[in-house]
Length: 244
Image (cartoon, rainbow, N blue to C red):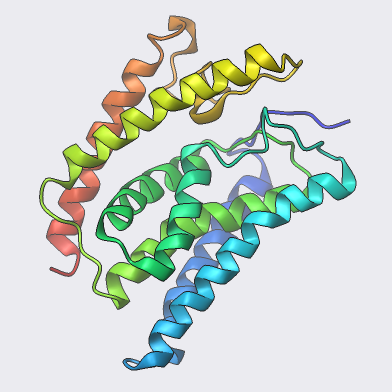
């Protein structure tokens, strides 16, 4: 029987395996790109589009696994790519084709922030089968490292004023996710509730920023404050050490 909302803790070997393998995979991608992808010409653009195709195919693997095995069962309450990380993964894949500056800005900030926190306090909403674990690492690694690759190798840049725009977009999307959760939980009541973007109830993780005891909607306040702080921190790091 599948157990939902499983938290992986630092005292588990698989916690560090997830960190280590994802980090090695991301660094290997950056190294291989610089070594093997042509420095200029159509082959360089073709390589990025190929990566986009791979990412889009990757987005079908877990739903396909669910439909074939039924463990866990595919459900609109948990299987739609409507968490910030799932949405960012789709945006990163699409931007391998269109290279839109606004899409890049949003996915760069929210991908790095969301990806890192997803490894600091992993909550597996669809159980912890080996395939689910691997898929989790691959997707969250992609939203961290592919935007970094595009920053380094393809001239994508973070415009000034991006922090305010990104936070505003994230706030609007999280409010929209609240409406989606409400519709799903009202129209299709289920023993497992829809909690996309964790705006319906607090995530079940041990994190000082998650104050589940405050109840809804107060538990969201420190998360929004932390998002603003992280946006400022990542922006400062890019301005200080990133390519200009």
